[in-house]
Image 1 (cartoon, rainbow, N blue to C red):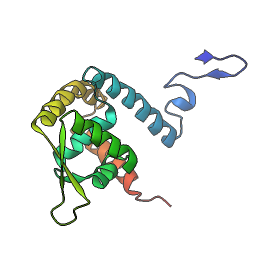
Image 2 (cartoon, one colour):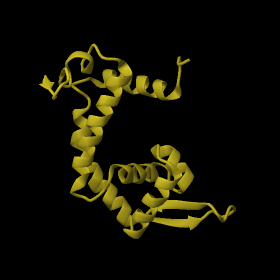
Image 3 (cartoon, helix red, strand yellow):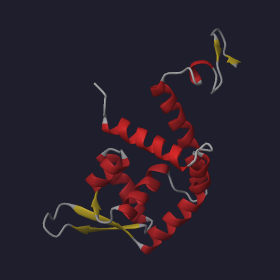
Length: 158
């Protein structure tokens, strides 16, 4: 536990309400923040941000997605996505092409350089991802994945 000036003792991660007695929403946010920091550290040597990694990953899964599609997939605003795509295009990692029917829509694809960069990113973040399983077996990992998807879908939420 640590104590700040003129305030009560703040528990360390894993203690008190920051541990198993905490609210699920708070614990989910706490875990997300810790994961984000670990991922950012893993990607730093490649000079790739976590949002850029997300975009590269989604483009590999969904080639030819539009900027609006990528914003939804990557959980980012369209304005942020525009900046990310511009920077990735300038770095040679992605290319844009007009939609064959809707000329204002730009379809975005990974370049060969972008695929190589994504491979390097995946190699850097693989240990971070592997450490997240917390010793869970395959069935436990599937249970957690299913639970997270249900939360995102809003199943059972008022």
